[in-house]
Length: 185
Image (tube, rainbow, N blue to C red; front, side, top):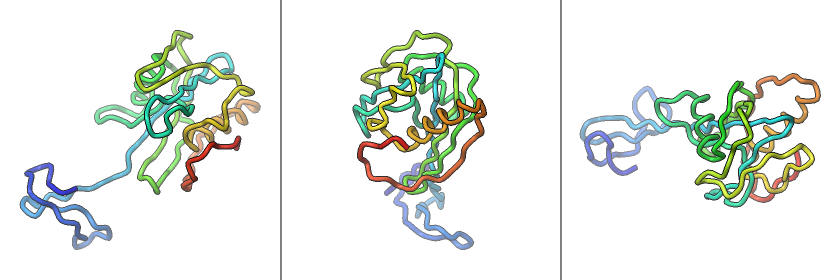
């Protein structure tokens, strides 16, 4: 950040009295520009034992498979964001969204939240950010072609939890992993 979004004046990087982290502070109007983690909201869309996955048409990880999800927009709830992203990426409508996994990724200043959700029907298609969208049974999941560790962990938990028919909310931090094909967890 070089300029204040309030008045356009230059900003400086400084630690204010009573704070323990440096922040961008406007040299003219004094506005403190806090930079906070971004929330990624997504769905684990289900249909009769199958999971809907999207092959990414955008970077990062273009060509790899993911659950539909993306950055939360201002003015929407996490559930609304997850449903919107599912509609945008897979042209699919979901219902009965239930919080399922929440991953802290402090190394990239993000929090990833996934909701278990039921597809309303099987009318889905590739959205602008997807190359392909399809339903997968557990044995068909392309584990080595998953885009992100949070997707792999969510799928792993789902298939384990499905056996017991108990779906606890999972919350854990994830350390950075090298960006290479993932093995099944």
